[in-house]
Length: 315
Ligand SMILES: Nc1ncnc2c1ncn2[C@@H]1O[C@H](COP(=O)(O)OP(=O)(O)OP(=O)(O)O)[C@@H](O)[C@H]1O
Ligand SMILES: [Mg+2]
Image 1 (cartoon, rainbow, N blue to C red):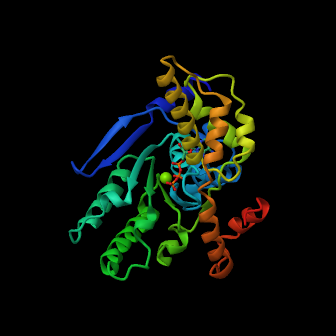
Image 2 (cartoon, rainbow, N blue to C red):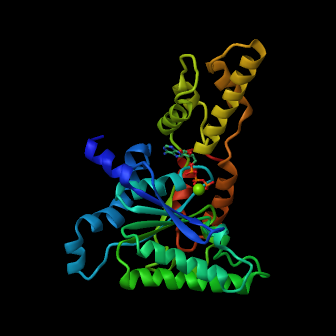
Image 3 (tube, rainbow, N blue to C red):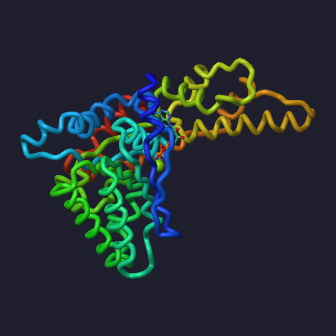
């Protein structure tokens, strides 16, 4: 990476919504870019087209009456890098990153959740270019709980209002939503100009798994480890599963160290032992997704998922 790129990354602003203080804290933080995201080539291409090119060629987009900005919806099994990718997108376009957990703004007081939501969008608008990441989008927009329906309806309406605002007069704000259950999203949220771009984030490939294992083991006492071998045997593991696997191995080495009174490094056996005890947590998601894709997917939104299931022999 060049010095210039490194400098850019360090300047990237991360803004966090602090519910308790009702204020937004801004702080500089070194950021990942696409270079840190193993694989995901299709996803990167889509982001290039939607987010990066408009930012780099604003005059073309202006000439056609289009503004930079827009929204994407990331979905897939838990722990496979949605949050990680959203941050990398902000790093890639050198934008501020505003991370919002929907749960955190939900309030029991009528009108307050909407107010919080509006505040966050306003903050995004005053920090352009800005990636506004809405995590756990499933917290609203689902029309399955009848009890909370009215309350949720108001919040969905507010969200629609803010998203439509993005199209009309807010260039430079990029909204990225993430959910494990896109099929529960209110259909109004899926119309053009809103979250109409669905992007599937699958579990890491074998090469990506090796990369993630390496990242998680970095700087820990270890013997010569063959992470390639572990990657080969951890099919369907998510990034979070691999993180857990390394944690288990750490625990074993730590336990040995405490027993012997000497620092004992992580060994290949520790990794293998941990692998034996862990199961991938992505398969349950695939079986649910398969149901939707097969029986309720009128728009063929989830064909990617079916293809993935077939190619990876998931049953
Ligand atoms: N392609 C990848 N390259 C490098 N690291 C990855 C990749 N995919 C996942 N990871 C790692 O896996 C971990 C889990 O990823 P992340 O938290 O982004 O998952 P998520 O999809 O947002 O999960 P959830 O649905 O539970 O919110 C992260 O610590 C991240 O570092
Ligand atoms: Mg996440």
